[in-house]
Image (cartoon, rainbow, N blue to C red; front, side, top):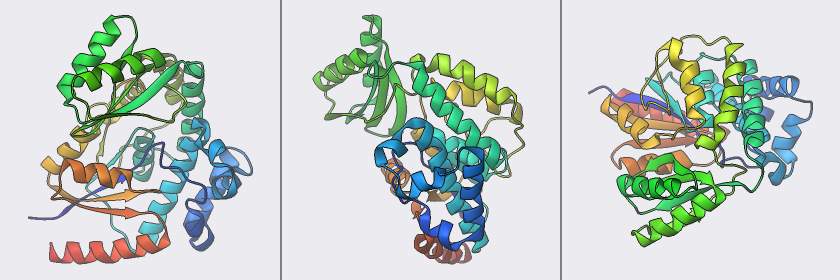
Length: 318
């Protein structure tokens, strides 16, 4: 059976000061992407990524374009140094925009400006402190769905936001809704509830004001057919070209169906996943979904060259 490759791109939470700096310094195509980000956003944006304050980088309007730029720089480095094209691509939340950009559906300039706006819209949708997100560990999806429905019906909106892997689901909603749902989830057998350090209730219905602004912005942007299918968070399968914009709008206030997206790609024959970005969050989730698949993570120049050598061996032997 032929080996199939999928490339995955992380979302917010993975950002770290200094990410992408070695490829910026040593790879021409990576450097030009970072310079384009400076031109599209503001001069000094790369300084924030390489030597700024972690707290400033973590603001959603900075984290989103910073991660998109870093993951794209790593991807460009991979291609320039002999990497191959994938059979599928996917990204977690913000990472879905990176996946479309890597697959040629969005221009880098449009994408980096778009995710900066997406961050600003998300930040403005809910006043600070009024929304929250929490990772709930060790409870089945159906049981947790019942919990959030019960709390929402009591007048405190909360819903499933990220279905990450078996036993790891993130909930999102009003601060009180998330607090009450976390308590009820524990009563019903959840092992742990970990509040997330985020600036808002992402992927919940509270993001609908941001979604209508995002829709207006997307209407002015050209999207082309991706070179390889991109598995959408909203549907957990690739969507037709004329549905990409609508699916990105829905994605903002709907669950990221990460587990189902990975299961879809595995069902289509994917057995190798390569993560482009700082950290290894997605690789860890993929291993929890299916221990048999192989995961690689490209975080810098060194890991890029290692992974290319390993992939060439895998594909030759596959």
